[in-house]
Image 1: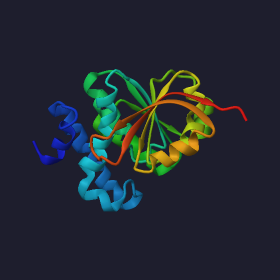
Image 2: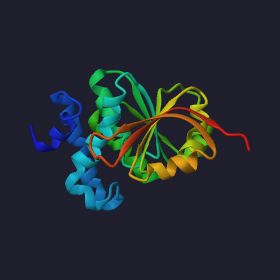
Image 3: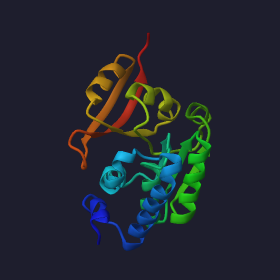
Image 4: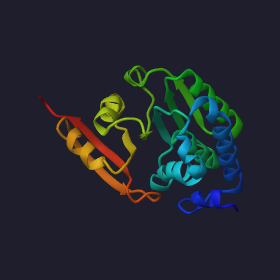
Length: 211
C-alpha cells in the first residue's frame, strides 16, 4: 500500500475498493486543479495527508453519522471524502451545497466516477439551507468561514436538531471568543489527528443570544 493511502489508513482502516475510489478522486482533483483551483497549489504534494486524511477524520470521529450536509463544498473536501467512505458501508448520503457552477460540475463528475454516496445542491448556502427540510445528522464545512459566520449559515438546520463538525485552525480561540458574543454554545473541541495546531469542532447546540 502506498504512502499516500497510508495517510488515511493511519486514522481509519479502509478496504481496497475504498482506497481505489479515493485514488480516483485524487486523480480527478489533480486533473481539474489547473482550471478550477480546487485546492491551494502549495498543498498538491501533500494532498493525501493535508486534504484526504484530514477530511476522513469526520468519519473516524463520528462513525454513526450517516446523513451529512456539507456546505461550501468546493472541490469536495470534506464532503466527497465522507461520501466515498460511506460508499463502503452501502448506506448514508452527503448533501454537497455549492454555488459555483463549475465546481458543481466537478462534484457531479467525481460522484459518477467514484460511486460516492452524494448529491449536489447548486445554489447559495443561505438560500438552500433556509428551505432545508431533510433530516441530517451533521453539518460539515472546511476552510469556508469564521465560526460566527458558519453558525449564521447553519442556524436553520441546527435548529432542526442537527449537530455540526467544523474544521478549524490555530485561530479558533479568537473565533470562539467572537462567536460567543452572539451565541450560547455547547461544543467539543477534538484535536486534529493530522495537524496539532488544528481541531474538529463539534457543535452540539447553538442558541442565538438575545440582544
